[in-house]
Image 1 (cartoon, rainbow, N blue to C red):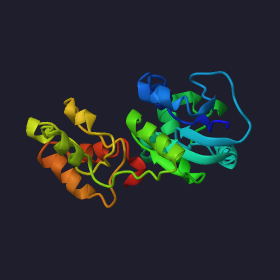
Image 2: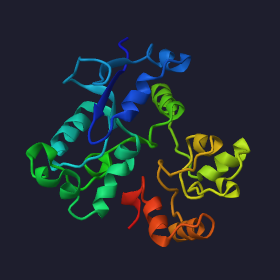
Image 3: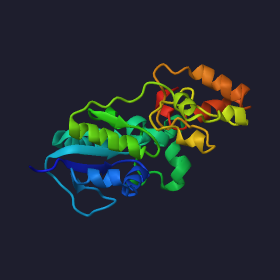
Image 4: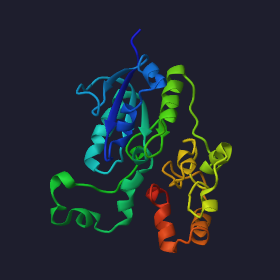
Length: 247
């Protein structure tokens, strides 16, 4: 029996999530590669495919209308489409430009009108095509991506945790960043990564997006009162990976 085919595609992004996958040299990843046939992966191979695909992994945000046709072609050919990484799931850091007037001129100056620099509103992949699963994060969590793929191969439905990162910090017995005089957005950030950043002394930046019905007003208040942020900085911080999820 032929193995399921797996293909990687990239749009507006740093392609760091693809690079992250190439770093997976552990037993779990090598075991996965025994059960799938990777047919396209620009960061790791020159071969491409124009045929049917069982699983398509799409990285990067949808920023150009010209990319819609390519995304629709991927959707047509793929049995399952997985948006992976913050850019593909929410627009990611790219979406910060959605709050910046004349962002092209700001970044590229006099060269802003050059055709190859065309760029519009940064949106998630789901703004162009139907997405079956999402693996958020910047970069993705290796364990979560492998779990999603494993569940697909075994016919098991994957569910993203609905609770915040603070829950995972408590499970790890990680000292709260606010108790260390720092800031953190774990109270509204969607869990599923295992909270490695606070455990390493790094504030959670909500790279996986927000939990449902996140209280952003309370987040700003905490950032101002506990971390000493100005309101402008508090709003800007809460947009870092989630610019499309808030005004």
